[in-house]
Length: 226
Image (cartoon, rainbow, N blue to C red; front, side):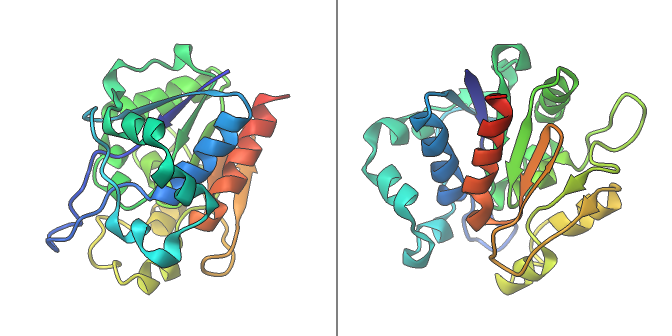
């Protein structure tokens, strides 16, 4: 079975002069869980080529078994350096799509028409859509055929307002994930800051924060193995 991982191309943290990108753990933990289970994974970004890593995700306190494995894995690092172009990917070629977070997606994937159409194509063809941490923000402008927002009346989670406050980026990010999911009519739930919280609503699977990334991948895998 084939899974498409969609990762950000955006590396500027607003106008702070600092860098952002994808969060290593939110890529590595799901990637290895699924890869080790025999899934074939393709990684795509809006621009193709090198996907930027959020430097904060390389801090010592952000490391896990999965990130340590990633740093030693030249093959996977090469995949991240040479991602496919998102506009070339078709839902028909995959069984599911997974969006790792990091702050980057709030600037590019949340407004990317190819990404929005791809998510609809997966969902409308009864293929699971998964996203963790900031990545549920990519649903913000997606509209279903009936005119409803994609997350309307669905149970969802994503990076909470208080977690954004804790990392002191509330005033920097283009929007707050929790606020946006609620505004779109989603039934947003959360746990304590940095706790594990994964929500499944049919084919839609979301996780609150980095600690939830492996749980999202586990639920995705259970859906695909049914």
